[in-house]
Image 1 (cartoon, rainbow, N blue to C red):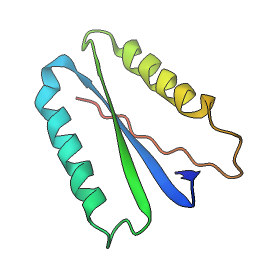
Image 2: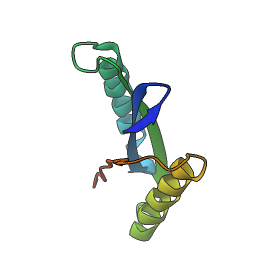
Image 3: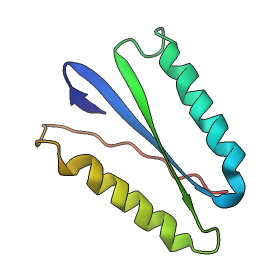
Length: 91
């Protein structure tokens, strides 16, 4: 997670192709439910980032993932032991 104002914020990302629009909604609802459950996330909140890519271009997903990673850390001062967790979902 990333440490801001004494709280942990976790960035959760997903990359979908255009045919998976309904998966975007399911992903967002799951993250919203998770954020409402204080038993699981006492001081942590999950931020959603979703990108849609061309299903015929597998390299676009990799490039979008790299771009998001760079933009997350471009304005953040260096922090000790920052852990960035990400998952790529294949459709």
